[in-house]
Image 1 (tube, rainbow, N blue to C red):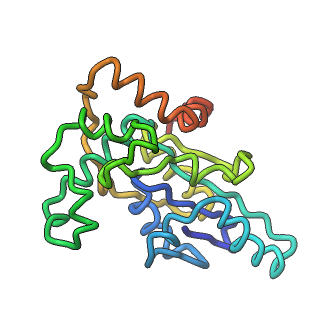
Image 2 (spheres, one colour; image 1 turned 90 degrees about the vertical axis):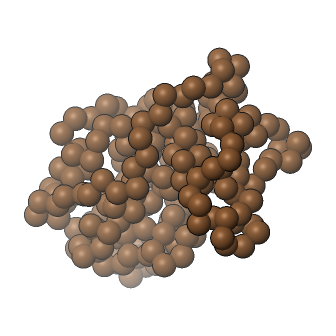
Length: 211
């Protein structure tokens, strides 16, 4: 999470949306940059409002901060996690990390386990959460002022922050998985989309933007 009291922005990093690239670019323009621990780097909107914004509102009562994040097409987000957990180094780490390895399973198997009811006991490799848990408040209300669609490209985001900061920024395309051809059965595709119904509801409400 990055926040600037000078340029009046806050950027919340949703996992697997290219947010690390943008976070690193914004670091030099931020008053605060959280990034040394997962729970701080990928701070949820509720935590941001309860702690970070509560402090800033008490210290700077008139300060107006516009928060933003990037959201990825939900099915592609799942594929990105599948790809990310194919890294061979997971096998050389702790048993908990090794259990997340997906290099020996198909994407169909990944989706099958991902979309099973919790009561069935999900495999560790299929525990990826949801994007809406980073974006919505606990009461279901929107916790971020502006959401960018990952699929619209980083040009839109570069334009937004360049205007905020007053100088042109460029975001390297790091940690980007290839766009998948979701080679899964129709039945699994329906299960996947139903699994991400809240994420789809948010994603489909975001206006398409072009730079």
